[in-house]
Image (cartoon, rainbow, N blue to C red; front, side):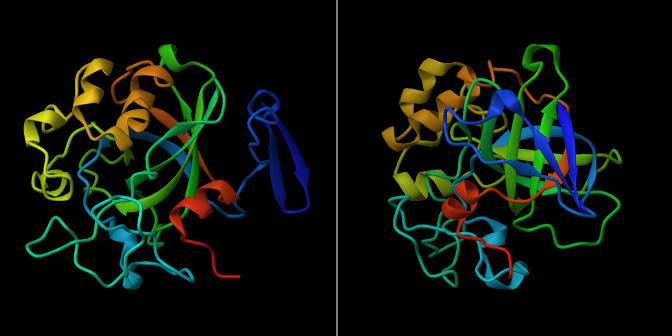
Length: 242
């Protein structure tokens, strides 16, 4: 990785992560966070925390959707994981490959050593496991994570079929699908073939874990905060205040 300083910003020249699939230059956030962290995975179908207007220091909160997973819904509508709620995570807020070494996605996160509201911030992961050597993932924070118990930064990557976690009712409410189709409560489906038990609109997002991420479970990462790429902003709808 080469670093090219331009004024107070640093551009990461990721030669093997550009061009062919339209990826953008990755620019370090001035004064941003960096460190190491632990990853987990989830997909509970719930409305993301950062989709509530009061949780973001941005022009608009993260998009949430009607039960079809596509149609944007008013940000004041209650989460489908609560009684009488009808707002859910949108189907396009999972991980996807840009090329063989770079992916984009979304995550719940809890950071140590900062009091900042990190909703809608973006971080670039460098995976530290041997199986994912040279792979990086740029994620936008769209949800909050559990409080760190081990003094480490925690990132819960959003990937369909990766475990509904505590909120077992969200996916059954959204898709009228038996909870058993979603795999283990924590961890989700165990193999790629099980992705086809999910609604078809989530197949690609589920297979991302087994294909681009090679089925590696909870890899450790180093991370650096970066400017959010337009591609992620166009999906989440959570754009920085200008």
